[in-house]
Length: 453
Ligand SMILES: O=C(O)[C@H](O)CO
Image (cartoon, rainbow, N blue to C red):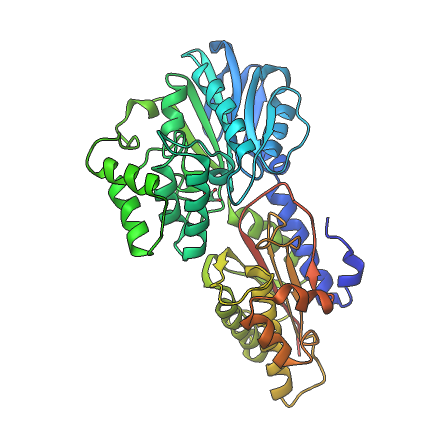
């Protein structure tokens, strides 16, 4: 799964870090998740504690979108086979499916083909009746991949607003409060389109805290955010949105455009929501892989957020403590974390949050190594950081793997960070991890392997 793995795995600690990454990605892949989450026995479809008698429905369709949506559809087909009558998913990571139509869209900025695919998805939703069972395949990336401009808005309006929101530093809850109010599908509006069908909503969460109304902007989840909230995000973050967008939001605040459906809306009467995978799914598998290799595993948090380079300093400090005093676990140990860090763009280079995390960690390790008075073991702490979807920032790398040998010239590492240009820096040091699109999207995975003195 990891390209050129042998070249990266030059020490035992690196080998362990790569094993943990691979175990995490495999556990988060829809084929693994769906196999664990749903079963079919005779005509009874089970998800968690709920069962559905397929004989009670005329047809079963799969609808959805997101980076991993086609993989979810394919995994559902493996279990449900010919019982699936059709459906549409929109994704940027297509795979072959037999019954569900896979349409391509684009991420992180929506595109024309995404709009066309989403229109098709909405047509399939409109065709649902009270005898339809709809299974939704909703994963991270769905907001960009399922663009359905509301009212008079155009794709260009959505693109300009998305660009501005992504550059603004607004968090995903804020970004999606805006996107929901510009869409014919997000913020629960897809539930209205499929009502009165029965809906089983399967969610793969790339949102810290798993709020279902934020994951892919909650197409079949009640929305408590308002036009007011959306306008406040634009104002607070100084976002220069197109006039048509501001106009729609202002008309919404004035009550001239209908609000997204809230928890009391009848559209949600027949919807059940299941978060079937999240960052913890990945962390638990990685933790197990570490333990199997004789390392004491410790999950620090599945909710790490904030500036990537600063999070790296804190992670390395904890690893140093482990190594120096055995707190909070004794080495050999593996520290693990998930969540999603961000990068404040100041320069004009190539990189991503996980690559900035790794570069900053490598810089810390080089400084710690040089100042330790104990230059015999530059490999005592090894750090890997990836985005589980295989695409860190807008690069073709998932992240990077570093240790105390990675940075020999701290000034170059600092310059690369200052320019947000860490990708070429890491490439030159053979530190980039490449996986290609992994088929899942469950946030970041960070592994710190701490060897014994
Ligand atoms: O698509 C989105 O909105 C983000 O990936 C969060 O799920």
